[in-house]
View 1 (cartoon, rainbow, N blue to C red):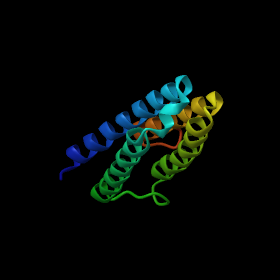
View 2: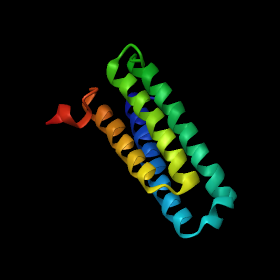
View 3: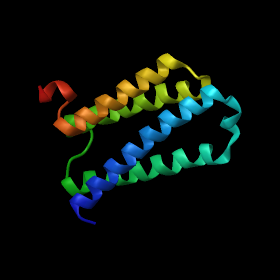
View 4: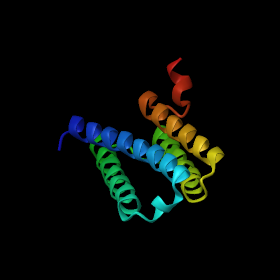
Length: 124
C-alpha cells in the first residue's frame, strides 16, 4: 500500500472514530440502555484497532517513530489522554471528560497536521 492510501485510510478512520465517539456519547446520555447494544460495544474497537494498524503502517512507511520523532510522541501522549477521557465520558456520561476527550483529539489532529508538538500553535 502506498503512502497516500495509508494516510487517507488512517485519516478516514480517525474521522469515523471521533464521529462515532460523539454519537455514542449523545445517544448514551439520552438513553443509557443503549450501552448494552452489541454494535455500539464492538464497532468502536474494530475501528480503533484498524486506526492503530494504519498508524503503525504509516510510521513504517515514512520511517518516523514515537520516541524518535517528537510530533509522533506527542500524538501518542494525546492518544493516551483521549482514551482516558473518552473512557470516563462514555462509561459515566461525564460532560467534562467528553469535552477534554474532544480537546485531546483536536491536539492530536493539530500535531499530525503541523508535524509539531505545538499542534495548532505551530500553524499560526
